[in-house]
Length: 136
Image 1 (tube, rainbow, N blue to C red):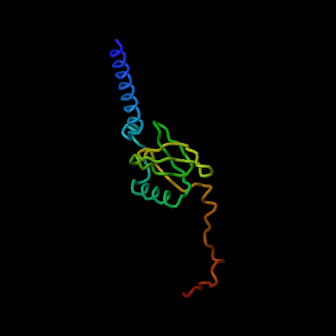
Image 2 (tube, rainbow, N blue to C red; image 1 turned 45 degrees about the vertical axis):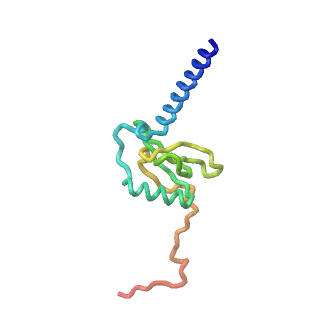
Image 3 (cartoon, rainbow, N blue to C red; image 1 turned 90 degrees about the vertical axis):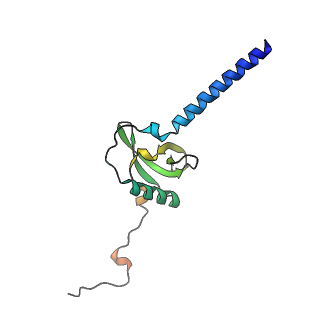
């Protein structure tokens, strides 16, 4: 009788562990994320390049994400998830709290965040000690 109870308990534990593993794997499966038609977006090579530069330089970005049938715009800092390919974590730049898990298939457009654009200084003509003159 005691052996039967332990075998039953072990079988239930194995069943729930397998169920948990399948739920975990389907959550991180990019094929499950987006099955409908995507709206027009930036070219994939441009998104890849921008993501790599944003991660290397810790630049806050604004990402347009297609989630289901609607798109949303999210601002924050990207981090790569090294355990899963094409998965990124979006965090707040101030305290690095997790905002969202983003799959590469969901990204339709990416740009520098508005708060970071204000800190980028463009050179004006008064910054240079010389002036160009018209020759023709």
